[in-house]
Image 1 (cartoon, protein in one colour):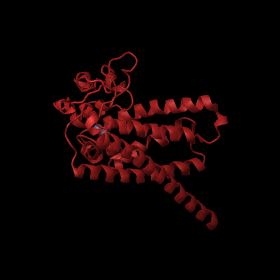
Image 2 (spheres, rainbow, N blue to C red):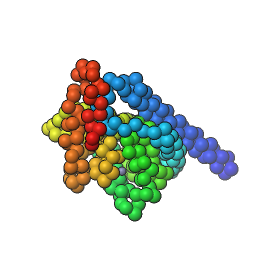
Image 3 (cartoon, protein in one colour):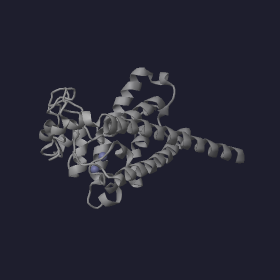
Image 4 (cartoon, rainbow, N blue to C red):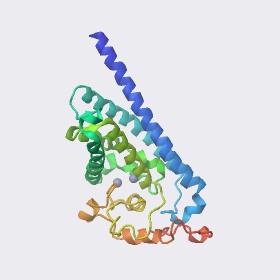
Length: 278
Ligand SMILES: [Zn+2]
Ligand SMILES: [Zn+2]
């Protein structure tokens, strides 16, 4: 009995360590690369696509990184709980792809993304409730002009809410461990894109018949600036249905994107922060 207890403790320690290291590496590699490439190396070249001109202070970087580290530890704890539930047979997580086939594997990744989009929109709306906001979500909104490091900048209670999609999903539907990894990585890339501070898509994207249903970096940046608009994550569907897109979203998006990203544009100083007045 003691032996089994000891073994479970060791396993859980290893599980926590593994999940935490994977999340930490993902954060450092993706948020770090986004920062180095777009905020340092290419800054002058693409400054005309900068969404807000305002420069974050040193204290903003520090807060975003420290809260992100706290979030990564909490994700490790939630990961251990999911693992514990899994080994006791309470979840629908599986590890043999042949059990449901590759078709289901990729379907489940897409389903997770749509489920997460809805989960995020409504938990986000809830966290903006005046009685909840300052206790849970204010930390994330301290970044008025977020940097890529804000991707995990959450109060510990918000980190629990954000992590909640994983236990919820694996109770509802069969999810392969690899599908879960792909989903979490995709989600993090999109999260960094939402906080990257530059707009990369083309003018007209938000109304184009093939792309209108996707969110943009401008969309989430405006959420940080204006707070009570633009709550969505991947898709611009719930914000349209609920009338919560910022009234000037499309107009501001088109102002920021009026110069094509790949145009040879030497005199960037003249065009610094086209959106600085937003
Ligand atoms: Zn918010
Ligand atoms: Zn944000």
